[in-house]
Image 1 (cartoon, rainbow, N blue to C red):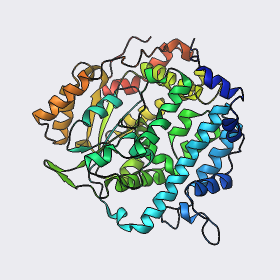
Image 2 (tube, rainbow, N blue to C red):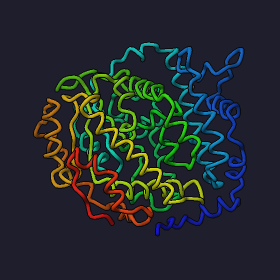
Image 3 (tube, helix red, strand yellow):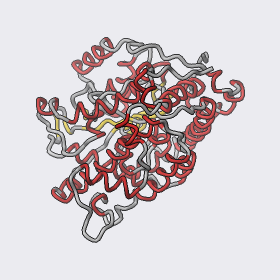
Image 4 (spheres, rainbow, N blue to C red):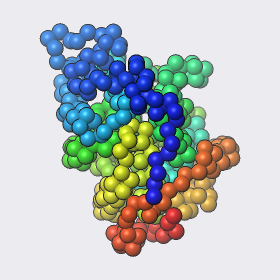
Amino acid sequence: MWEAPARPEWVQAVNAGGILPISEVAELPFTRDGLLAEARANLGLDAPVGGGVADFGLGRPDGDDFLEPLAVLLPALEEEAELTVIGRWITRRFLLRFLEVRLQLTRLLRDDPGVRDEEIVAPLFVTGAPRTGTTILHAMLAQDPASRVPEGWELLRPVPPPSPDPARYAADARIPLADRELRLPGQVAGELDAIHVYRGRMHKECVSSMSFSFRSEEFTARYRVPSYVDYLQHCDVTPAYETHKLVLQVLQRGWPATSERGPVRWVLKSPIHLHWLPELLGVYPDASLAITHRDPLTVLASVTSLVATLRWAHSDHVDFADIGAYHEALYLSDLDGLVDRVDDTLPEDRTHHVHYAEFVHDQVGQIAGLYGALGWELPDATERAMHEYLASRPKDKHGVHEYSFADLRLDPGAERAKFARYRSRFAVPEETIR
């Protein structure tokens, strides 16, 4: 049976109401107008003349589209998420950052409208179900100097555009700011680093850039918010991908368009793209896809452990089996959908499949196969850099990730049958479940 990790004493004290400044902030309600006003105040800005939310609108006449998901999310956080004191405090900071960056993006576009002229050419998206090797594959691709892989701090706080000068880039004051935010859930939950490490200078999932639209799985991962889940599963996520592209345009502004080996290419990563491949390709029609595959039963147990621990940072009420049931339905839909789309919707010449079982035995060899399929050059120096990266990141460096399929309270035989179509289509080997 899954057990929530022990929280540090300081977290227990905060949740008991013993830390007054945090408690006072935690008592503030999550109201739209209150959060918008606080975001403006944090940046020293006044509301626009005549009211409205044009200053959050990303320079577009329809820029108030973020209000719709926000109107669903905020009541869900109040009424469904059952947040602790520190959970409410973290969440308020979380929401305010998104709003503050929207303000910054809007002002940047007003002052430098050429940002939207930046061309994002033929990006590569690494995707697949969670815990299938997407993180290590993405990190290894980042060792190629011909690729641009965004770091955590860039995705959390993209404005102003980071400097292309290496010394100025490394000294950016936003790095420690983002690092503190990314490390905080692990410091609260107790054991998150053993499952997934989050840091400001690490390469990060690009889902964070979609969160500025408030259409994002960052919220469903952190919180039990069923009404928002229902909204997210039925809403148009194109605005999220348009915001995603805008963030890349900002990060690219002022950077060289080419490397010594040709045009600089963006390499992005997130399992969430598996849900919305048609929308992704609608915004990035020349994108390439690297899709990872692994036994879904292992995926379900591992990702549920991650999400349960992440939610434990925000709430005392974490139902492991409930989270597992959600993921089972979500990834059954996604993986069956992938079977349906792979031949009809996805670009055959720009889609490459990577099997976890083969990747763990020969990471660089599998990447060489990916490069060959996409027509990319893989110089010897880049191969060496990838091998060196692997050697510097031993398995279980931050602790052992313990999880069990039995904690999901699902029947293994029944689940094998449900995912049989996916496993057969992509020749995914069965793993021994823990």
